[in-house]
Image (tube, helix red, strand yellow):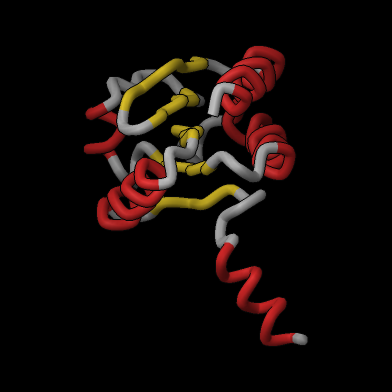
Length: 126
């Protein structure tokens, strides 16, 4: 029974949790997998020195649990500058909503209500 539980867990890696992305290769892999599965990707562009980002981290984690069919990624802008630049991220936190490679929406700032509403809206549209 433990083996089947481990298999089920492996099949749902990342489901219900926030995945921290630390390399360009990880980013590419996560985006390609989500695109192939036609899943919504919600990206939290954050920074270790950003106070509002720390306030939003538990909110983002709760949303990942509530919407396990979406992929929730966390990107440190200082660690992965090219990705932040690619998406014109200029303030933290910035949350992007990506579906099949296209940016569908964004929330700039620690605005819990707007983030929660938009995750619900875009996740329902899957």
